[in-house]
Length: 116
Image (cartoon, rainbow, N blue to C red; front, side):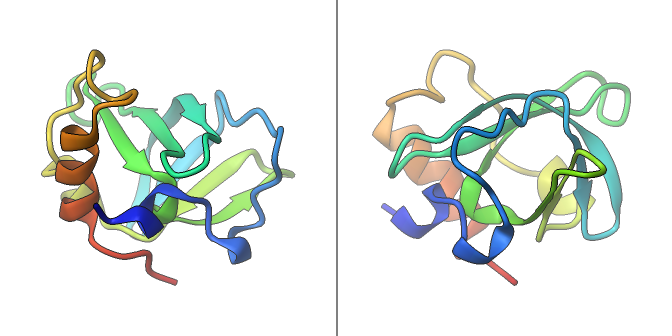
């Protein structure tokens, strides 16, 4: 399992206990949606992004390791991936995103390692 993808990067500015729900999410090439839910669980932290009309109401699971910066002033989360990388990610499975090791391996493997 790609464990480093499932933790917030120390340089991201993420603060434990900060409610990310509703924060706008920015890919390296533009806005992709907003945080619908998130987790701070050690070893399996993530955000679920509601992409709205951008990709027809799809939700995507992004491991916390994809987050490069959290801007609490503007309520934005920046991820080190392009729109296409996110659009082509494994399909979000609302029943498997919590506690399913195989699903986490699939998603973590797709995103690889954290990027600055």
